[in-house]
Length: 343
Image (cartoon, rainbow, N blue to C red; front, side, top):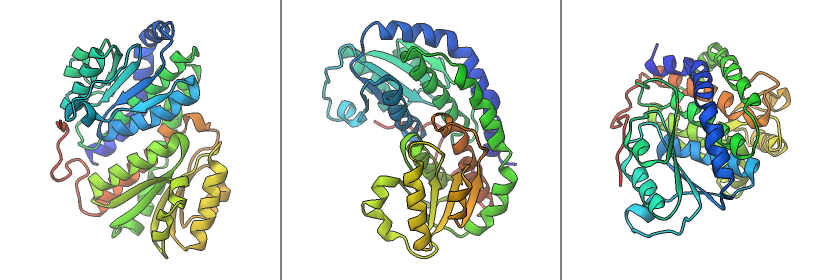
């Protein structure tokens, strides 16, 4: 078994540790932030952590009503433009905490009057040294180059931040490790279907709302472990032109949890069926699964709000198993290293 698959299996325990270890301090820090009447939250990240930031943008705006922006690191690192961020909250997200460009963003934002939080798997990192407060993902050492357990633990900390900023509690979040454990039970079904995609060299991944970030995350996993050209779209954006590339047997992966976005995803699934696309849908809803060529049936009862973590796990398993079926190592993608330093 690959290291990536072993680390995927560690996620329920890592999620539970992260929630229990960081809960008290998150509540304390968020209480102080609420008193400041923060006008804007800025998120700074790269790679998989940037996908976690994309998720956080939706989550934080939905739960707190505070506008959220994704930082453009080049504004700070290359164009050297100083922004007015007085009283704003800036959150840096990084597996290693050693990304030079993201850390430079945090330094310049702090100089501009922002309060800086860090979310990292390394409490002794350079990022932790810059931040006013650091929250550590309790994932343990991640040895596979492809990030899995650090991504979902980042999402857990972002759930905690959103709940605490909204003045809520973490009671609902205690369900997430159990949902993740249930997702791991789908592994045999996923392993059985990857042979169908063994020679796939391009695809599209679609999500919307809270699972839009998962479209990005599955796509990056397919690109870095399987060397598949994977485009990612919101289902709304996909209909505004890119769907024209779909023809018979074109692979399309769809995240379709029940909830606010589901009716729009069902309409898309019907459209893809008429185009005879090779659609693989991840959903708990049998109606939309029947429209797909292949389906990964998720356990019922997972609320849309908490679906991103359990829904990405089948995607992680699929990417790892497909890489193996293609004769590749998901743990050591060519030309990649665990820590990427850019400016």
